[in-house]
Length: 289
Image 1 (cartoon, one colour):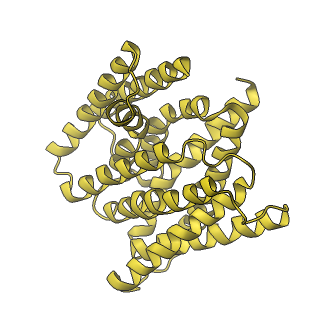
Image 2 (cartoon, rainbow, N blue to C red):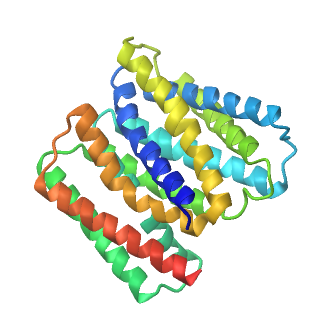
Image 3 (cartoon, rainbow, N blue to C red):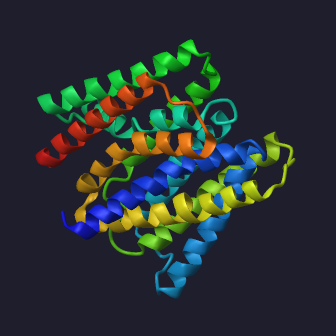
């Protein structure tokens, strides 16, 4: 892996991890589903317009359309929709810890449902990763974390794992920016329907809210997604997924710095164990691939 790929991977992890902090700011002042729907519609339109300027077409292959629909439903509407609702009652650091288990869930689901054999090193990484999550969440449970929000995050992480498994290789074949834009628009349309039927549009406007929304649209919303697709094209999905091990630390650190969320010693230990577990799983699966 060359230096440019490493820089791209680290930048992606920083962008992805920042999404939880900006989301926490947004949902404190605006209806979560409405805000997320607007984010996806804006990001999707921008991506489609840029794709057309670059000469890409929306005449996608059948696997690409399948990927757009699955990602729009499972990743954008379910995963992020549930997380935005959950972060009304739980801290961003709790949300990012649960979301960071996605590589572990993908490896576990590959074994349970796709018949993939797990190497001993993969099993060790899974045990370590989930043990780290249990350590962090144990401290939060004793502090009275909202179980409803935690449950939504767990369901959302499972939906993201399903999306990841379902679209393996489906986004290859060009037009990647168009695929990104269309799956965002699909998620935005679904969330708009849900928001129309469930939310009242009351917003507490402030420059902090506007800054957080602009950030989440341009950086984790559009920038991180485009960078991820570029990274996958450059070094393949298995190698690119290795950078997910940075997400627990970066997400928790960002929430602590920007939002002032408390960090306990057990949080730091747990995050280190989770990172080691994710890295072990990813390196093991990469070697197998």
